[in-house]
Length: 243
Image (tube, rainbow, N blue to C red; front, side):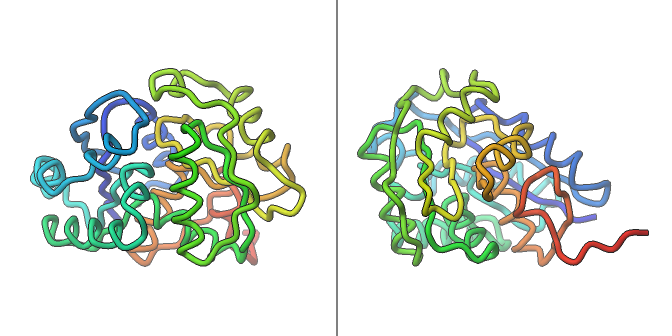
């Protein structure tokens, strides 16, 4: 059994995580600990306040009781809003508090893009433009090229959490560009686990989303690789062996 731990602010799209757990297989457990969600806003200051050591400490004790082997800070905006260096320091703090390997959704996007061998990415965000720009800067710091980051449908987290497949696909299509090798949807309030197959089919390229890359990043820290094609190209291992 591999136990994966996540610190997740609030209660927006947390049901993506048990869905992903079901699709991964019986020997992987996903444990989600909720942290203080702060204000229901996309303002940069509020995003930066989400991932403080004090808020991490509140969740870490509960996380240890789950037996988690790795921990991921499952808030994209709560990571990249600090910039590359600040997000690295944030992860080091989390690892120290938790006493286990740690990372964040923000770094998960960069590592996942490298795993797929893509360099040029489109960003489909429901953030205000200044927040989307911070994510694009973070990706560039990680060595990726961003093809015109867009916020085609800026919305509050509570609204985004209610979007279904049609709204998610519209968001992705509005931001996609012909030269993008993958489309990234960074919003951790967005439900995407059930839509990854249709999204990749419609766009004809890999799609990376917050809950998907958070779980993949936790597995990477645990040195696990899982074939789960329903979770998109990121979880497709080649070659496949038919039994």
